[in-house]
Length: 285
Image 1: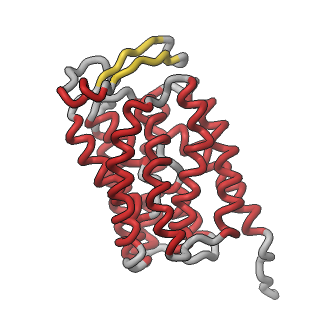
Image 2 (image 1 turned 90 degrees about the vertical axis):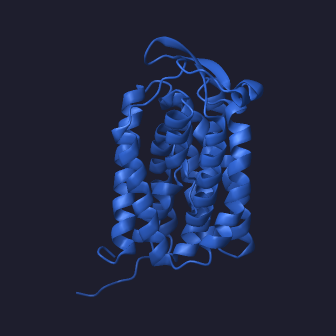
């Protein structure tokens, strides 16, 4: 039987389709999409991992920007929460991108898999906080890191506040660094940092995570662009797909119960983490 090469135009179409599906799931899970895009495209598409990581940052950035207006309108994202934390992550993401471009692909895959699996286990073993039950610290009061939103799925109006603000800044500095290293949106870490550490309600954490990703990624992406690690054939169809999928995901987020979102986060993280770890260690190429 003769083996024929796949026509080049199949890959852009496949990237657009995969991007659309990831866009829907990414907004619901608050993960930015890069954490799915990098292991999936890096494993099943014929592109070098450096190009995949560069595209992953732009991919996650496009998805969060597309979903942002809807998230702000329905109260699922808070600019007061996003801006200071995003700034901390943005500064560190540049350093992370420089480090990541000097590491081997296999080491990056293995480290990425281990990190994502660990975070999924933390989310699974810890109950989410619904906000409104914490005493804000002085820095949180000064920055007015608080708000309210109506959850149509639960039929309740939630007033929320945050605490452990310095810990939050440190966490998002580390998240930005890791996002730059792995070429990810790092939303897989944003959600537990906002929800479990700072006590923001889960849906606010998911929605705000998307906007934080857009700030962090816009800084790290310039390093990949400067190094020539951005391939238009890979980026353009994937970005078109994720922007369409993210707009649908933002509309669904308002109606999906918070516990379903939590389990979606866990399942997505475990699947992506196991795949990346096995590929990085050479057990599943």
